[in-house]
Amino acid sequence: MALIDNGIYVAGHRAESPHSLEETYQALRENDGMAWIGLYRPDAAEIRSVANEFDLHPLAVEDALTGHQRAKLERYGSTLFLVLRPARYIDETEEVEFGELHLFIGADFVVTVRHAESTALGRVRQRLEANSPLLAKGPQVVLHAILDEVVDEYAPVIAGLENDIDEIENQLFVGDPGVSRRIYDLSREVIEFQRAVHPLIAMLQALLRGSEKYQVELELQRSFRDVLDHAIRVVDRADSFRAILQNALTVHATLVNQRQNDEMRHMSETSLAQNEEVKKISSWAAILFAPALVGTVYGMNFDNMPELHWTFGYPLALGEMVFLGVALYLVFRKKKWL
Image 1 (cartoon, rainbow, N blue to C red):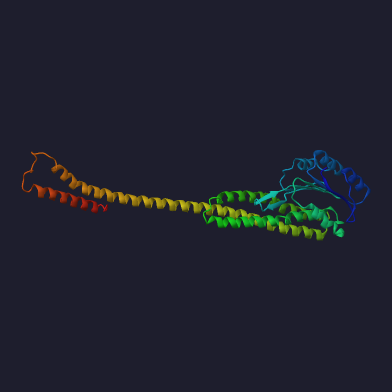
Image 2: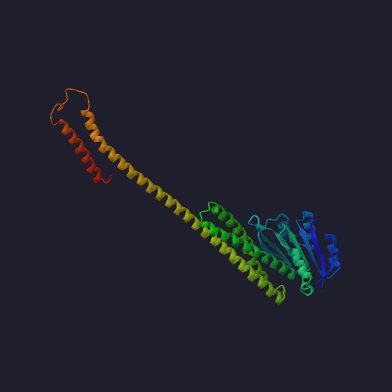
């Protein structure tokens, strides 16, 4: 059975705690009060049972059955239908886990449908049951308390995301190779968080606009306005996180390009230095090759060679060696190879 907690409230006090939906309907008819039904992952039969009893709109019922809805507020006659996306930060995995909470708010009933373990609705119920004069004001008080709880639960998420962003900023400048993946993962979390919190502003503003038409007490209107202020701050923080992460991606790309440029410059400098060394080696090799060529020619064992028996042949050969060496040295020096 998906019925988690169920109560009939009369004048702010819990009059009965029925154990089934049928008992709830009967008790509500017998008492002039309010039914607060808490369902967790109900099946189609249970949802349709509640829909038939409280005349819920088929479109809202279909949304509650299928789940995976965006945060929104819709009014069907005298019934409000809200979809909220609670969130909690998981320290172990450094991830944000999102839930889904559907609310049906009528004149004498509140139906909550949870599709994940996220929002502490039990704590909300206990807090309101401890304040019977407030709970006696009806379903609008329950709606405010749940909205306030969902928005308050965003505070640890903000703190967790902020801590992750601070760590990323430190990783950027130490050359951590895994920082880009972490930025992308965190950006995905922040975008999903934005999708959860952004609609809250329009939802709360719509509730405030209709407060006079539906005779919401002034003090309760102020309470809704306080929740709106908190939601605006949460949205601003989420937007700033996304801007910071986009800047972090830009800085990371710049740092990567800078490191690549430094590496390319170092490689170019190394290549130039190697070229200079090759030039020097080639120059000295050429200088040493010229005398060796002359010496090799005159060192051949032939009798009929020009100037072989000439008195000045030996000094001439030595002169040619010195001349060629000096000439090549001057040429390479002029070309700045030496």
